[in-house]
Length: 370
Image: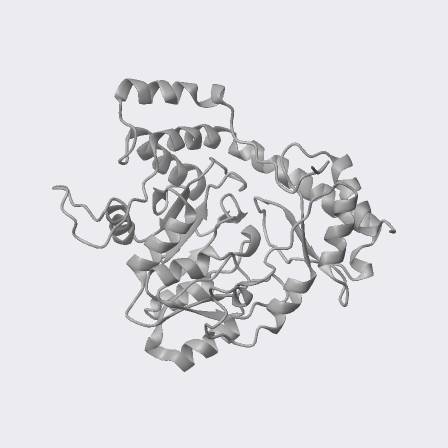
């Protein structure tokens, strides 16, 4: 048991969504894109995307990746993606009959290296079925290049699992013509337990995803395409609607904790001692605080040091995908930066009930002797 656990999810309490549960009881409609789910989708588009684009909810973000890739991919063999990502990303491509092809990341924002990616696209040509960048840890990564890929008829599905609520001038992904997949997992900034969202400016694609998410059924309940059951229940939609009412406050709390981290990091001079932060732009709905320990140091050492002081930390993504059994034989570029980050990264707690004292204890624990 840790005094400060790495994650401590905090969803809305039952009093916040009890009225929605009464609506479910009265309607006796529990799933199949019911009234609450429809309202949830519409309010997400209104509140987070300024009424631009289209979206469909899914039961989790992995299902969302599978559905989005299956609907947007072109004939080809490979799904190009970083190795520095969660296993769901290559697994989704594999479920769609594709082979992951791992691209190194850059050493600033830890997102896919676009120059390397372009070289691989030129090399593979029509064998590229889809490109799947990852918005690392919720960052507002630049999407201009990926929009240009869309215009070149190279489909793009952005894994933006942790980016719901991230903003730079506008909400991350707003207006993107490919697909953007968000997660509503309990550990994310917008947590409902399990769930996800597929967003796009392409209405037809979203309609195909919605049909595929319901067994490929048309209006006559005839399967018209390869489908699965990816729908969200009305109960999950009820929690989602209640969460929308308090999301801005929840995000503000996470941003405050992040600011405390930045203040303490500056006061302790950690950056001068060789620690390194992820380069981020705009505001991010942080799920945790990520930084790299000094070069030639081991992240495992610092994680163990914190554990001895009752503080739980993680090392996402170590091992990176290309070192995991399921993916180790798939093609890749040189992954020098990925491996360097993987050996140095430490993810620190950031949950809504933390106070500045927690932050101080965590960061001082990194420098504590012994």
